[in-house]
Image (cartoon, rainbow, N blue to C red; front, side, top):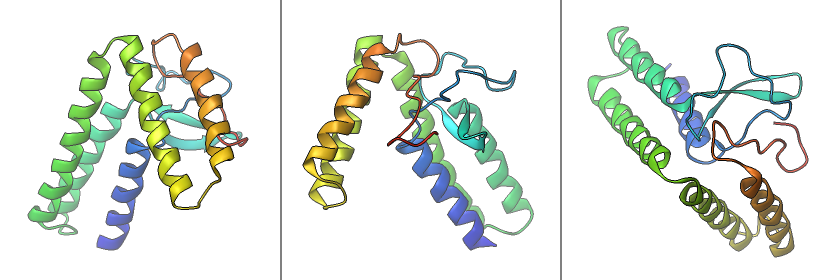
Length: 162
């Protein structure tokens, strides 16, 4: 059970830290998933080829409650929970800081983070330099088209629906 919880946390952290900058292609949101001004989001489930988004702050607060439930159920030690919650709190601080930035600063930060990720993948041989350049160009166009409100509508990723 601890392994399953750890895997869930790793997935959540990964999504929150790297792939959390996408939105559904259709622009359709259910009443529970409307953008609330946060520029970042977390993928919560995949439906009809596109993944629905959830406000990352709400998602992380739910994760903290879930971790405490696991402690009460004896599935996690308090020390393990404290370490996980500390990482979540750090992520919450990062998101709040991001949300305080001006639109040009947000765009620059998104582009810088994506550029660094592509450089790492190219250096590791996971993608070619040409592929990295192509992805960066497509991402740049999407970021520049974003008005800074709600979730950035980055649509599909690598030719696949999100």
